[in-house]
Length: 128
Image 1: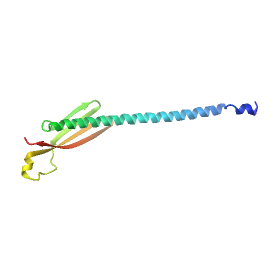
Image 2 (image 1 turned 90 degrees about the vertical axis):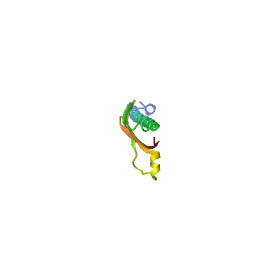
Image 3 (image 1 turned 180 degrees about the horizontal axis):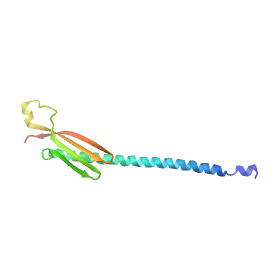
Image 4 (image 1 turned 120 degrees about the vertical axis):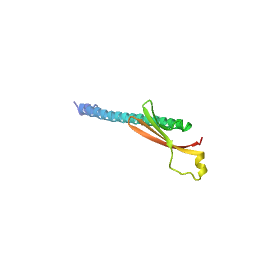
């Protein structure tokens, strides 16, 4: 074969090296996509857990006295635990103020496969 004929095509080794390079790039790209999908799923689950915790907090704020104590529940993949009780962190500035409003602490912990979060809120209930 003349040198002109060899210059027009690729050798078998060159073709194999090119295929190996393409396979390597595709493998790395696929792994990146899979990792991104896992991260997105984890973020969505955390966001769902946060929404559940916020909803449970809001429900307790509607009627603090009836939700006093501890309760648990489950929504989809998220289990939650709510604790509502008197808040003892501050003292009333005057004797009359203590009888008007009662501070409560609401603590909600949401757990899902792979993590958990806790939200705490203070709320006031009128004395009745």
